[in-house]
Length: 242
DNA sequence: CGGGTTTGACCCGCGC
DNA sequence: GCGCGGGTCAAACCCG
Image 1 (cartoon, rainbow, N blue to C red):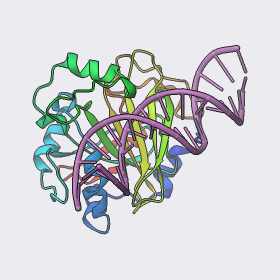
Image 2 (cartoon, helix red, strand yellow):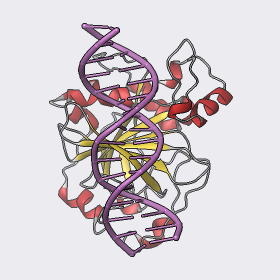
Image 3 (cartoon, rainbow, N blue to C red):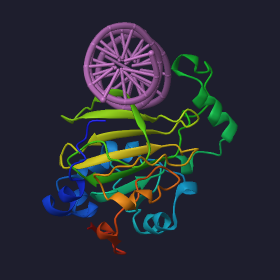
Image 4 (tube, chains in turn blue, orange, green):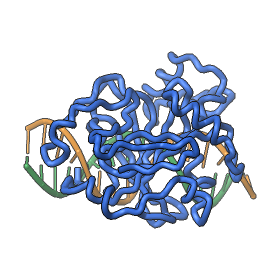
């Protein structure tokens, strides 16, 4: 881990003017939407907390700049200590039902062991859930332990994308972390899969002390840890976290 | 020494 | 078929 846990919250609270995702996306940042952002998002409604569904209903007005076979939803997962702006979309939703078993199997297989014959359709993916966080550090503390297993340069972006896997042996949750190329202060984190274990919650004295025991969602989404930063969301999805 | 990171190579899907 | 880009592997390296 290489973030300075010196003062997350200070960044979030003091250093960044908070913007809503719509502010971001509607202006110069269309690419965030039309480019990778939508592509890398995917979420099944099974993971959708109520607010997700609500937001999805409100937020399906996604410009089909790319193949978007899923609804965009805005999510506001509470990042521990940043202002966060989040969106999520689902690819899995529209995929025809896949037996969990198959999916598991596919997953178990490593790259080299991929079954030669693929099904008629696209490779099944784990439900994915992405959100945007205004932060200066790439790797947000979310209560789980992650091991970086790769990094790639992203086309159209000067920032690399990092790939992390949950270190828990039985848990194959992955996440990708990249910065928005159009707004470097925004970190886009995409979670894939669901944790099969509880958060190992690492004590981090430097941060919010007693609030650390606050929960993670079942999906490994960072949850708000400090009431002081409790996020607010309006029905119009303009979110400001403090 | 164990666990995490780096990084080049490799594989795969997809568009042309 | 080919090239490109995304995603993953794994050896080497680093660090506590």
